[in-house]
Length: 126
Image 1: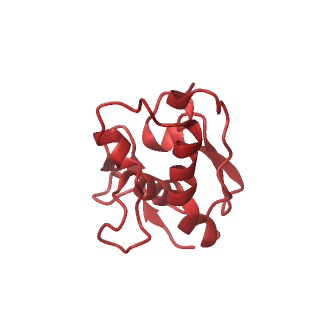
Image 2: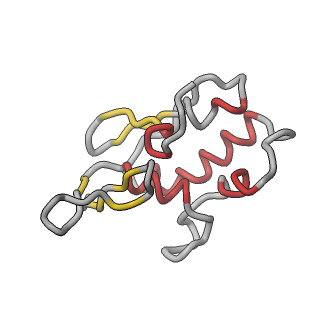
């Protein structure tokens, strides 16, 4: 696996390294960020991105089920799982729709560390 520029989830900007360049990461955080935040089929290819943005544009998430949201997350992360970058998503707090993204974790297989989607997306934890 190569390196990606690191993204600050709060500002959604690349993180400067203080020398005119950008911080680099060998972890999966940047790939996770783009996979979840970008619309499905965006610039990089038909499997890149997710349909989760549709929820952000909706006036509310009422009427959605926990299982539906989990399915969107699994669908979005499938290319990263298939590429061996991350393990399958692990869902916690399945009973409350508002907590699904904030309580979902994946394992960054290059580092062997758990990553919370809440940290990557700057979503408050449950």
